Length: 116
Length: 113
Image (cartoon, rainbow over all chains, first blue to last red; front, side, top):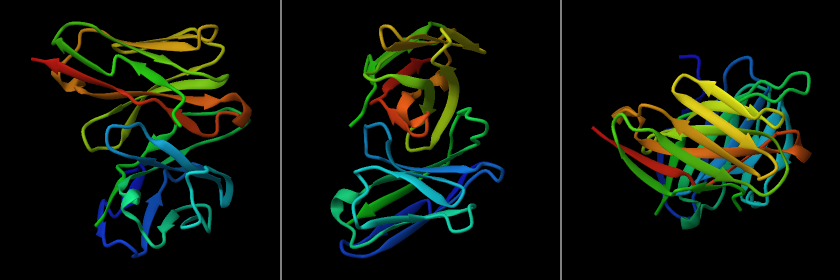
């Protein structure tokens, strides 16, 4: 499977615990994005990377959230001291950006987080 | 906050009929994309239309873009039960060179066999 993959697919945690999600993009894609989606809503942008550089962060991304893409390949999203409001589907997407041409983003299956 | 607004929020049709979904947005865009999402699953990219394009086709899909009205429409012709899903429009904003997508709330389409 050469698409975007995310692990784990489901995560249940207790309030106050830390969680980490992983995203493996399509191999030749240089851009990687994180979104969050709550039930019945469209996804909301969190942050994105071009190679290993984190270029933009949404105001939704509080200090408890941190994302990395250390070698410009896979990325991790960590949430510290989880709160019930963090319960959502966390989606990762990747795209190829070249010569100022913006191309479609391909999404992974998501990680569904439930905070008890 | 979500820039796009899809209309209608829900649509129920019979197999074989056409389905039309509309999307309105607020700011200048670089491109507009439509995605499909089956219940509890990830998003599947359907079609991308750039701000200098007015219409695009892909199989049974037809997308139009009117930048003067800040609106787009997605037409699915000869619908099938397998088209049942939520459909989202997403805009790439001009000032960010289309870096991040802003999604609408989606249209939930049900196609009855």
